[in-house]
Length: 343
Image 1: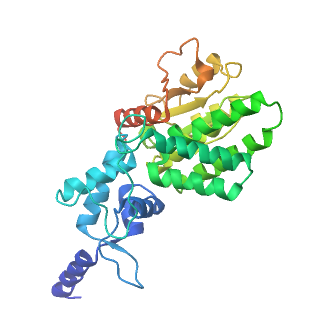
Image 2 (image 1 turned 30 degrees about the vertical axis):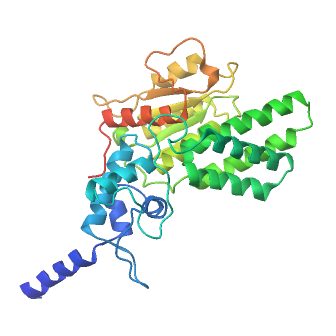
Image 3 (image 1 turned 180 degrees about the vertical axis):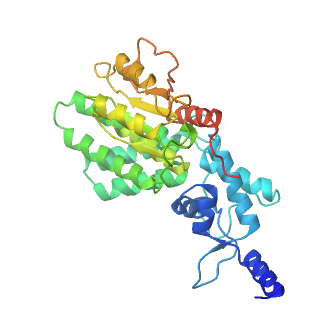
């Protein structure tokens, strides 16, 4: 092949751009994450040729690189997308790409966005409660999906799902066993919605990978069956492209310890809904767990989630009071540990 031919091929590659798979490997995220950023926030390839794989131009790549950098620092996806578009194209950064769903900009603090009236959340909660009481599963699923699409996952969880779950729980307590089926149905559909929000798992970390590159460990303490808040955290981390291993409800001590030693996570999240299940000795044991070769051993930061941890403090443990705060703290720890941000 002549020098001119090789140069021509290089020019063609520059023009056609890179594939989604190649870009995902380059950024260290899953292809599903890129497709979700495209569908929800308009951060997709500008060129779309029918019948061909989508190709990302240099400008497209720069935009999603900025998106990855911002989300890795803990910024909510909707706000990160807004900032990524604005940085690269200040004249149009505030507007989504044509043909994409508009996602309201998300504030960095808990609570509704400036343009969202509290009445909006009240109406959504009432609609969910009424659908749950009627055992109207299709309406429940539609209302939950619409809440996430309209307000973002974090806001929908904190302003719609949690208050509705609490209200239904109080109604069940006041009415005896009459509303057990209502609470179970609502909880199941909330769980289903959270799972749908989760991204496909990222590529596995290499053996003995630094903690910043390793998946986080999420687990309910032994005896704890209430896993919905942990599922919400898992879904929100998935949207940020943060690798994780979610172990669910009532995980035995030995299983948590083994998972920590095998994966070497930067953060281990232990959820306890009730004080009867929260175990300070367990938290200290996990915080003292080490991994790696001699001379380069690591240990995790333990995050204690849930009201069950009210009481004696565990030295060095994180104690977030909301989902948004948990995401911010996790982003900070990963950054301090040298997280491989998108470049």
